[in-house]
Amino acid sequence: MKYNYYDLIVAGTGFASTFFLKKYLDKNKGGKRVLVLEKGQLFPHAERLKIKRGEHSDFSGINDVWEEKVININKEKKWPFTTGFGGSSNCWWGCTPRFMPSDFKMKTLFGVENDWPVSYEELDPYYEEAEVLMSISGPEGTPFPRKGKYPLPPHTFTAVDKILHQKYGNLYISQPTARASRAVQGGRNACMTHSACDVCAVDAKFTIENSNINVYNNEQVELVYGAEVYSLETVGNVAKKVNYVKDGKDFQISGEVIILGANPIFNANILLNSGDKNPFTGKGFGEQLGMQVLIYLDNMNNKGGSTWVNANGYMLYDGDHRKDYAACLIEVNNAPYNIRLERGKWLNMASFRMIFEDLPLLTNYITTSANKLVPEIHFKGRSDYAIKGVENMKKVLPGILSCLPVEKLKYLDPFPNEGHIIGGTRMGQSAADSVVDKNMIHHQYRNVFVLGSGSFTTFSASNPTLTLAALSLYSADHSF
Image 1 (cartoon, rainbow, N blue to C red):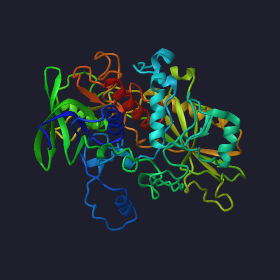
Image 2: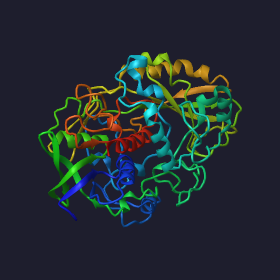
Image 3: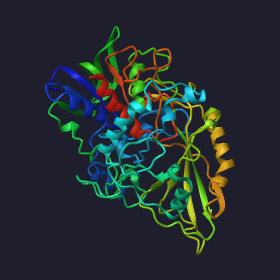
Image 4: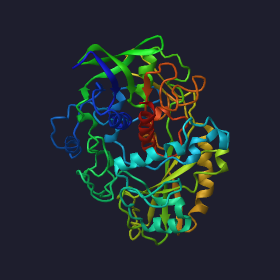
C-alpha cells in the first residue's frame, strides 16, 4: 500500500463501485487517497474469448467458479456471478430497461411490501447519465417516463415484434440495451446476435473493461488485486478499518469512508462478519423468477432483429393486479437456436422469457460460515405473489398474442436462476425497516456505504443493472 490511511476505501470493481467512483472523482478533482480492493484479478476480454474458443490462455488458471466461493444450501437454486476486475459486467447480457415509476411505490399503490425511500423522479437524471456512460441503444417511445433520445438508435424488430408493436405501441418496444446497435467510439462493435453475451465475441456489450470510464487509471486511485475483504473493524458506530486477506495473509487498512461494492452475497457477509446486528442484514435475499414460453407460429417466418433480447413487452407489467400477484416483464429472445425442428417450419417460432418480480422474503437469507471468506446462502423458495403471477400469465397470454397466428404455446419449467442477485441490505427509512438509507449509507455505521442491488427495497420485474448504476451515481452525488 502507498499509505496507511485513505479517504475512501472501496471493495469491488463492478458496476456499483465504478459508477460511484465516477461521480465521486468528478466531484473531487485532486488530493484524495482512494484505495480499491478487488477480490479477483484482471481477466482480459481477449483471454476469456480464447478460453471460450477452446484455445490456450495463460489466464486459464484463474478460478472463477461461483460454486466454490459460497456454500449454497439449496442446490436446485443457482447464483452465478463473476469475480475479478469489472465484476459481473463480464458475464452479464446487457439488458438495461429502467424500472417503472410504480416499482418505487409498491406499498402506496398496491399495499405490497414497502415504498423505496428514493423516487423514480429523483433517479431520472441519474438513469440518463448511466445510459450515456453505457452508450445504451433504445427507442424514442417507452412505457417509463424519459426525456430525450438514447445515445444509440434502437435495435431492429423481427417480424413478430413489428406486429406486437403495432398492436400495443409503447407497451412493446425495442429493448433498451448495453449491446451496441452500431459501433461505439473506443472499440465496442455492433451486436451480431450470436447469443453468446457472457463473453461477447465482438465486444459489443458494455463492460467495465471496455467502458472508457477510466476511474481506475485516476492518479488518486490505488487498485489492489487479490484482496478479499471479509469484515470491518468498528468503534462505536464508526468503521475504522477494513480487514482483508491477500496471498493467504490477513491485513488491515484504515480509512475515513468505506464503500462496499461487492455483490449482495459478499456485502452481507462483510457486514455480518463485522458484528452488524441489524435484523434485516442478509435477509430478504433473492431474485426474479424467469421462465421461457415457446410460441409456435402457423405459416409465419419470424425473421429479422439485430440483437439477442430484441424487445420488451409490458402488457403484463403494471396495473391493479399487482395488489394480488407479480408484475411480468416479457423479454423477447432472438437467439439463433430459436428454430423448429420441422421441415419448412424452421423459423415459425418466437421465444419469450417471462420475468416475474418476487418479494424479499425473510426465509431467504445469507449467513456467515466457519470460513470468514465464504458466505452461506439459504433459499427456501418463491413467494405466492410470484407464483400467482405465473398462473395469471398462462391464463391471459393467449389473448395477448391473438394478433399473431399462434399454432400452440409451450411453457418450459422455471429457470434455476435469472442472473439478478438482489437483496440482503435493503434500503428504507430507518433501521426499523432496512439496513441502509436512500443514499445507501448504513443506518448505524454512518461512514459505510453499501452499494448495489442488495439495497433494493423490492425486486421489480425489470433487470437491475441500470438501476443499481443510477443509484450509485445518485449516492455519490448526494453524499459528497
